[in-house]
Amino acid sequence: MASPFPGMDPYLENPGLWSSVHQRLITYISDALNQTLPARYITTMGERLFVVRPGRDIYPDVAVYEQPRPAPFPSGGGVATLTALSDLPLVVILESSELHEVYVEIVKLGDEGERVVTIIEVLSPGNKAAGSRGREMYLAKQSEALASAINLIEIDLLRTGEHTVAVPREGLEREHARWDYLICLHRGGDWDRYEVWHPTVRDRLPRLRVPLADGDPDLTLDLQASRVGTRIVGARTMIESVRRALAHRVERPRPVIPPSRIARDRDAEIDLLLAEIANVGATARRMREDEIDAALRALIETEPIKSAALWATPNLARWRIAERLRDLGIAIIPHDADKHTLAQVDLGITEADYALPESGTLGLLASPEKPRAISLLPPVHLALVTQDALRADLRDVFVEAKARGDLVFITGPSRTADIEFTLTIGVHGTKSLHVWMME
Image (tube, rainbow, N blue to C red; front, side, top):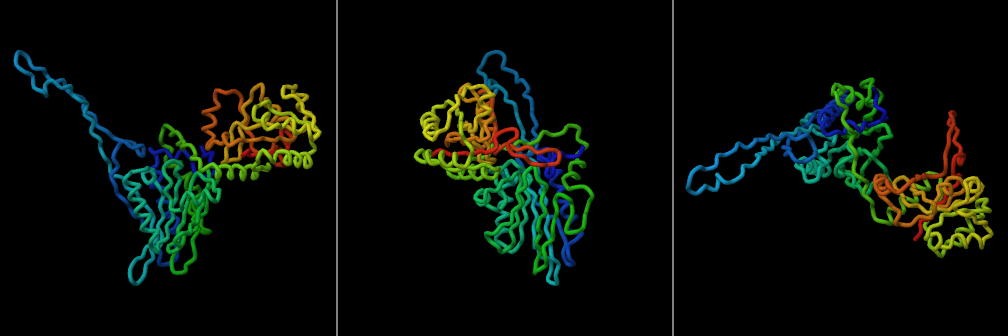
C-alpha cells in the first residue's frame, strides 16, 4: 500500500527501523549524486563509530539477566557469615553495542590529491538525544565543518529529539517558520548564513541545492523524486523505496508522536497568534479596555450589524460589551434564545477558552451560558481572547478539555468548496471573524 503522506512517512521514524532507513537514504543519495557529478568529482561514504550504552530510548536495548541461585544457609551452631545471610540480587548485565553512522562526502579530485568539498548528513536519533555520546560526536563534527571551507548539508527527518541542525532554532522562530522536518545548508565560509527547507508531514520533501567547489554550479538533489538535476535515478521516491524495502516486517511500527510544542515568551506567542489569524482570512489586533468603544463603533461601521448576541460570561460583563452596544443602537438578543432566533442575529460575541498561536485556532467550550450557536450562526463573529487562553499545543487543549463538554475549534471564517473547487466564504458558518487579544 502506498504511503498516505506526500513526503516523509512518520512510520519510518520508529527507532527500531531507523538504522535501516538511515543506511538506505545515504545509499540512495550517494548513488543519485554520483550519476550527475561533473568530471573530477566523486562521492564517498564516511563513517562514525561510537558505543551506545543501553538505558536510553534511542535504539532497542539488549540486556542479559542472571537469575540468582539460592544459597544454602548455614546449619548447626556457630555464627553465620555476612555473605551467607544476604539476599541474592538479580544480576543485570547491560550489553553495550557499537553504532555505525554513515554520511556522504563529495570529493573533488585534483593533481594534488583529494579534497572534501561537501558533507551530507542524515541525522539519527543518537545525534538528537540530549547527553548522548552520539550527539557529542555529531556536534563536534558539525562545529569542525562550520569553521572550515567545507559545505555542510544536514537532513533531519525526525520530529523528536533536540534541535540539532546548524541553523539556530531562534532564527527560524523569528521568521515564523513552521516545520516537522528540517534540511539545512551551510556553505563553507558563509559563517552566519543558512539556507533552510522546512517541510511538514503534509508537504513533499524538497529539492535541495548541493554546492560544489571552485565556481562549479550547484546540483539539485530531489529527495522526493530520487532525482538529481534533470536525470531521474529511480521511478519510485526515495522514501517509498525505503518503505517497500522494509515491507517484509510483519507488524507495522507505530508512528512516533513528537513531544508538545514548547511555548516561547508571551509577547512572541501573541504576535504569532495574531499573524496566523490574519493568514487564515480573519482580522486580529491587540485591544486595551479603553479602546473598546472606538473599536465597536468601527466594527459596526464596516459590518452590517443591527443586532448582537453574546455569551453570559464574567469578562464580557466586566468589559460592559452589551451596554456599549446598546449605546450604539444595537439590539441585544438573549444568549439563551432559540436557534432560529440566533440565526437571525448579525453579530455573535464570545470569548475563547483556548488559543493556539501555531495555527491561529480558537477553542470554545460550550455550556448553557456559552452556547455554540452564538459562534456558529451569526455571519459576523467577534472573539475576545485573554492571555490566559494561550496554549502551546493542541495536545495540551485535549488534555484539559476532554472532560469539560463540547469543544468547538475555529480557524478563520467558514470556508466551503464544491466539486469544482469553487471556494465560498460563510455558507456553513461565520463569514467574518474578528479577534481581539485583550491586554
